[in-house]
Picture 1 (cartoon, helix red, strand yellow):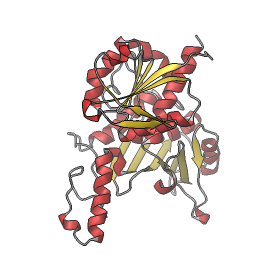
Picture 2 (spheres, helix red, strand yellow; picture 1 turned 120 degrees about the vertical axis):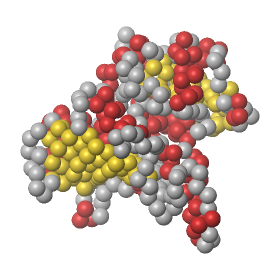
Picture 3 (cartoon, one colour; picture 1 turned 90 degrees about the horizontal axis):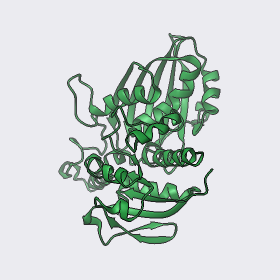
Picture 4 (cartoon, rainbow, N blue to C red; picture 1 turned 60 degrees about the vertical axis):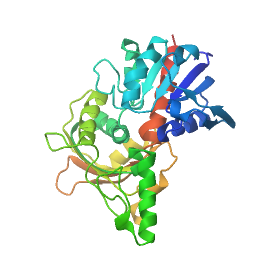
Length: 345
């Protein structure tokens, strides 16, 4: 491992994911030389806290990556921002780790979950960019990979229960505001801007826009990203639902394999897999829930059981903090792996 220390920029440092990236970086032994928090001109004058210090937010400009001699640029400020400014970071010699959807399906950009396809990081030099997958995809493929290696997946069916934080800070605030309105007996008058419908005391079976095939863009992200990450065209059907929680995406998985599977054996396979935690004692009411995964960097798996009718099917329930596992933690783990690979040279 190289002893080099790196200048790291966080683009969108005061956003929901940016704040989590800062938290994750502060918790680990990352070879950090200098942290540069970047955001739009609207955030000038604001500060962020990092390792006990207050750092001024710096305006994101086309030449800031060169001025600050950035080695690693973590983008989490929206697809249009990544589209405009990531090329400047690459031109300045930085590796870009992009949290948005903009580059995910670019055939020349690796789409990486370190527990699943770390070898793809080596392709970063083709474009200078590594893409971070969608939040709902990350926790799912972490679970799929070890089982696919042993049994061979032939199909995945998934229903998601996605927290409001997946739509950003304003969406979280909207849920809180609507619940306050409910207790004030005027929920009917509460506005809903982040979602097409009231989210408090409701679930909305739509995340992102619908496409011609009847699936939403979010659902098709799970389909297409899973195939790219796992290098395998796995038939997958997703139903993505927004639920009135603040953090933590839950997913109900139905997995079909090319051979018979045993739930007990599968449980032990998953127990040994990296960054998975088994919570599976239903007799003790122990199973994954969003409320117990907040600020955690692992994906929690439970309700693992065989299908009642098909011996080659398993069902399970998985939960992860979408701002961490589904975004910030995965991005930082990519950066850690990139540092490790570059240091080996």
